[in-house]
Amino acid sequence: MTVLHPLRLGMNIDHVATVRNARGSAYPDPVRAAKLAEEAGADGITAHLREDRRHITDADIDALVEHLSVPLNFEMAATPEMQAIALRHKPHAVCIVPEKREERTTEGGLEVAREENSLAHFIAPLREAGSRVSIFIAADRAQIEAAHRIGAAVVELHTGAYCDLHAEGQFDARDDELKRLTEMADFANHLGLEVHAGHGLTYDTVQPIAALPQVVELNIGHFLIGESIFRGLKPAIHEMRRLMDEARG
Ligand code: PXP
Image (cartoon, rainbow, N blue to C red; front, side):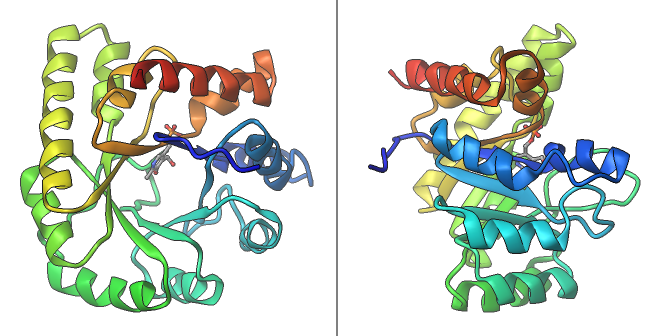
């Protein structure tokens, strides 16, 4: 039986593929991790097919589409190549992210306000194909308004700065960032956008974000894959789920 969670957990499996690719081997298999995550209560699986294929590969996406029972959130840059792949697979959701070759991870949110016309054209066929289009953005009013205008169904608010400030012990600045996330989650929700959040979340930082009532999905990857070295993947996910549910009350 599928359990419906008021706050969904999207498990990002990219870094299982990072470990695999470090040795050029066939293991660990990100699809196996995705199936275990499903069993552990993940409500969806997120995978980012980067332009340079540094972790997830085209074959991984094919296999995920074939084997997943929960929705796939296909993360991608706004390029014609990725659009064609998304249109071929028609995943449940497509999350548009900025991508720079030299970055270690997705560093900032998408500049929607500056690219409004081209992004509106870019996402139109994805919407027509039935995918829910999510835009990964900073918690910024102008970006949220632009995401709304181009017809996105979802905004995913970037929690990276909040998590970094926490890790650096800059608690006043962290609290300011949390306030901004809180206000912008509310603003996006009032515009009728579904609100997701993610990036850099850990057991220490997840609860204030999980407590925001407008946020209905968290996407978490790197920390959970790291934690699974010590606890195993399923227990690592169970603990995240427990913390999310506790924060949600
Ligand atoms: N959401 C988006 C849009 C991302 O790009 C990432 C990182 O790939 C995540 C969530 C998950 O971030 P992390 O791996 O730091 O938990």
